[in-house]
Amino acid sequence: MKVPVALALPDGLVVTEIEMIDEVLTLTAVSVQIRACCPLCGVCASRVHSHYIRKLTDLPSGGQRVCLLVCVRKFFCQVSTCARKIFAERLTPFVEPWARVTRRLYQIVQVPGLATGGRLGVRVTDRLGIQTCRTTILRRIMALPTLPVEHVSELGIDDFSFRRGRNFGTILVDMQSHQTIDLLPDRKKETAAAWMSAHPEIDAGRVEIAAATMLLRQPVVLPKLSSVRTGSTCWCAA
Ligand SMILES: [Zn+2]
Image (cartoon, rainbow, N blue to C red; front, side, top):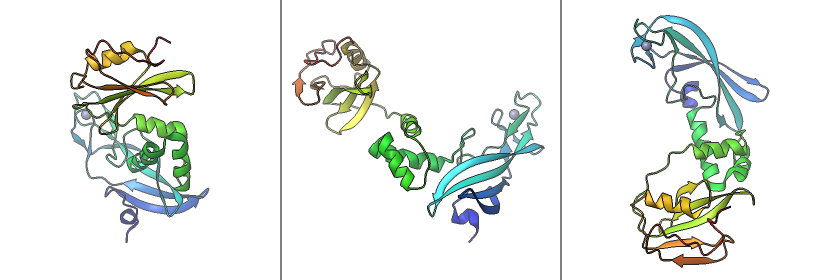
């Protein structure tokens, strides 16, 4: 079986060398894509300007960290009116244009992060042979697209801490699906009321507001969106 197939590399990459460098399985590869289209005008080009090496971190294989050294080409755009005179060929969707890790590694790091959070996520990824850090995991979770808010009949509101005991935000939860709907940058009632006013799909019939201590929960029936009452220390002006 060919190496690109065994490692599920894209068709446009040909592996020319495999070696261990500093305990990292290092694969040297060459891009042999037939088509390289200018990212600005979309016209395919054939005149090569130069080559350069992209260093990419990929998923571990058999517990070994994997690094790809990919020789990619720069092309002259052949459209005289195009503003992009020279461009580098893209390896999408295998890797994003400016990324230093492959998309599949990017995605796999999000999974333990979503399940356990940043700190525990590092422990899990470390056991998987993936070197990362807490802030990277959190950044990749934050990069996930936010799903559009659909009809919510029971809304839960609580505060949470960005920095333990110092900076607080507000978390909004669909109490029926137990899905987080949105995060707000502070815990002021005006911010929460403004968010609800901007989301008419939220049914104001029942809003459950938690106490800051997380111990007491007081279901509050809101007659109007603009009259959010907290009954706790949440969303008071800090
Ligand atoms: Zn162009």
